[in-house]
Length: 342
Image (cartoon, rainbow, N blue to C red; front, side, top):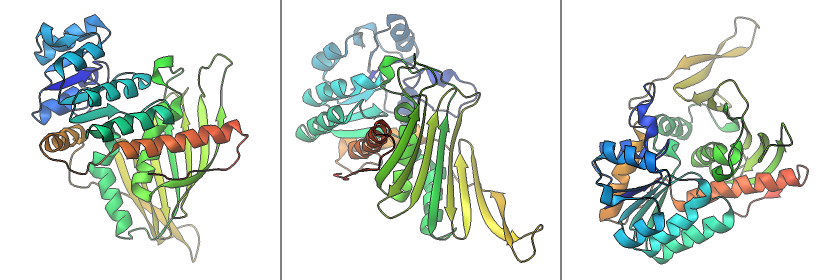
């Protein structure tokens, strides 16, 4: 029994986007992995009805109250694709009612207290928690990880990460501004590739007094291994951009949504005795079927207890960094250390 709680964009609506590679939602991923959703919940009855028709779920298996669904049906797998501030309450209720696996959208929760309670409940009731930081399942980022391990661009000296969106406002239910809502992906993939961030120094900006959360964040971070990382997250753009620029002593890697470049030194055409970096597009074998991989992993977890690619502790670690950046910004950019309890 698999229950989807939240039938919105990432729940299933984005499958209608003609440009996106499919599957690109939790519904699409479960379908591709042959793990059918049997129950659904959404506070929007019209949207719930639309989803039930498309997914072939009977009306009796549809709920507008997640508590009733979880307590009455006790699903083995619960997918949380609702507002950030509901992640922990739904997840705790699911664990308490016997869920064997919970897949939760990013970020894990609105704050560290909720996140810790969520993880503790999963530990107490022996529930596997997976956080959907999807780039961990992406073949291109795993290829980049291999390039780094193989010393393709030499020791890593610095990393720059950007996530810019057209969003002009983040509603209360989103749980935060661009750093929390979108930047969580950026922080998680940095830690996946380079290890835990140990300290941060951050600044935030609001473009108007009416902004509920910050509109822009920039942070200088230092990993436990000594790599310097600069992160930017912001809205109010005329474009969407997610990009990592990874600098080593022998080259540079640039990876973003839909592109991957390896920059290697070559004899300069401009300066005698110097090398320039020349970009080469790289096309590793694979396809962006991260939602399929996610739910194939879920199927294994339902049968056996296995290590997961994106755990609750990974989600907590990303939230720790976000919390530290916000605290640093509130203290006029003071350096904040992260204890790395996970």
